[in-house]
Length: 319
Image (cartoon, rainbow, N blue to C red):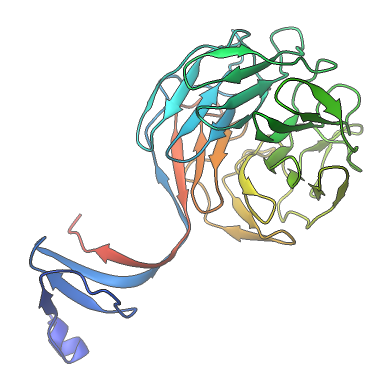
């Protein structure tokens, strides 16, 4: 077998600590940790995370990759359960007052919001999470489900859905919903991410007629304007991030695993999920996304974590 020196012309350097500013392709032996390491360019990738305690679909999500929130969902019965993610495992949180699926979720693990959905029947209920329990918030003006949303518990956005108006937008101030500017495209089972004053609506199904659409719309706090078109139009997907750094993953009819990233004007395909699924929950950022649950078909408890590639120190293993 050829030795490293024979290939590169020099031996691997032995050091007691990793170099402060290594070059791409540099290899060394760290005598303190007794490991061989190198500095390379990693690709964007999804990795397996801790499984939900319950396989579930049609749920909502909020928070970040290391402080995530999953709630509601189910086909029948409609579930009220909440789970909290710490970056490696899910644990039980406080139950929703109204169990439901096809609901909207956003906010953080300690200040989450759930709105609308099917309970049954369709519901106007809004609930706010404080990190341990849910309490009633201001009700939606009318019942809706299969909507999308984004923002925070005190500055939220709720748009589209299966009930009239399909293009409607509502803004939440922490206690009540008021009408915002209407979308130009009606949609349900769309994806939302961003904030109340910089929100994004992606893909989904046009209503009516029920066709999958590939356009993106961006909200500035009062009106929607056209954004970049998605490469793969799909409904029942999930998303994360902001209006200028978004992530869109899963979904589809048929079910797909593809992932795309958004820079505020155009979409770029990136690494696919390990498990194709739709009706999944999503949270996090473009650089650190979180996907959980969904239909594969059949309900799943699988969680995946997304990371953006780039220069990084890698430990060589024999596995």
